[in-house]
Amino acid sequence: MALPQTAPPGLRPLLAAALLLAAAGARAEEPQPVPRPAPTVISPPTTAEPGDASLSPECRVPGSQLYTLAKLRAVKAALKEKRPVRVLSIGGTSAGLGASATYPVKLETALERSLPDVDIEVEARGLQGEIASGAAERLRSMVAELEPDLVVWQVGTHDALSRVELSAFADALDDAVRWIKSHDIDVVLVDPQYTASLADDAYYNDVVRTVRTVAAREQVPLVQRYEAMRYLAGRTDKGEGHMLGRQFRLNDLGLRCMAEHVTRAITLSLLQQDGGARDAPAQQAEKPAAPR
Image (cartoon, rainbow, N blue to C red; front, side, top):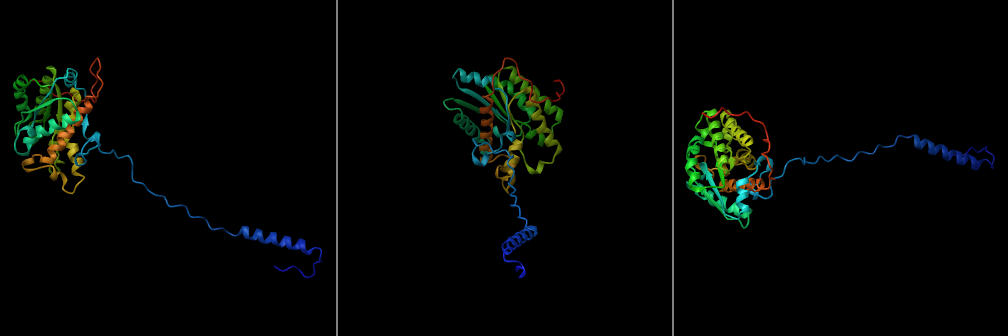
């Protein structure tokens, strides 16, 4: 803006300054562009539990989906006495047929790797297709012969496939676990295998829950094979097929993973602190019908 020509010479500097201030004020009133906020980066959730790093990559499962723990007093006693730990393995995978014949060796190797300088003796006495009540009847003679410190029992799969009456299965399992414990022998239960074809089968799932209920009530470690296999099946487009062979039997990878999973549950259970009195069960469960 030009200065008025009629302004006296002495006022012209003052007028020039006033005009500059007015121009600056006009520019300040003009709307300024609003800066755009920085884009928000959505990070993937970090709450997912990682797989147990002590397991081989193809067998790696988060601990919460792999085991529940409990004290193993008999095994601890054997370790303190520095004598071999005798393990009796029963259930279909211990039947010694096909690839299953390698399972006792895999379990023994995994245990000795996890417990260095400890001599582990694994004896497999499973029968293919055997249900819980049949194994329970044979337990007395097997225990008398082998005098194990620990029984690892894969249980429930054949009962579910055979459609054994649920209360009869629960009674047989509960009675057998109590009998084993009454002879100062530890027990680790392994629940049924997972397969997508039976994932929605109500009875099959009831059997899985029954094994978990007995394990919680009797305070024995549980290997959650069903959840572990389901987790591993979800990591590949082959589903559980990469762990199963013919006739619903675990293949070499499935057997190796199960040996690692059982070993991990045993190793962590040995770290449980001993107490004077028995601890309260981890969860309350309805007791099956009284033994007949």
